[in-house]
Image (cartoon, rainbow, N blue to C red; front, side, top):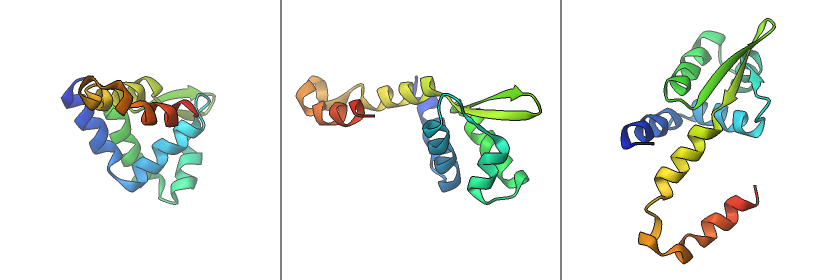
Length: 109
C-alpha cells in the first residue's frame, strides 16, 4: 500500500456511517452482508447508503458479489491488513518491543 491508497482508505473510513458499515462487514467476514442488511443497520435510505458504499468500494475497502438476487458486500481483509501494515510498518523506529502491546491486542482477535 502506498500513501495515496492509505489516504483514500482513511478518508473513506472518516465518516461515521462508513466506519460502522465497514466494522459490520469485518465482523461478518468472510460471509459478508447483503446491501439491504447494511441499509437496515445504517437506518438510512437505500440511495443515501449507496453513496457511502461507493466511497468504501472506491477506496478498495469493500467488494461486492452477486448471490442470487442479492448483492453481498464483503470487507476487503487484504486492504485492511495492508492499511494496518502501512500505518505500523515504521512503528517504533525498529524497536519491536514498543510494538509488542499492539501486536498482543491484535492477536486476540
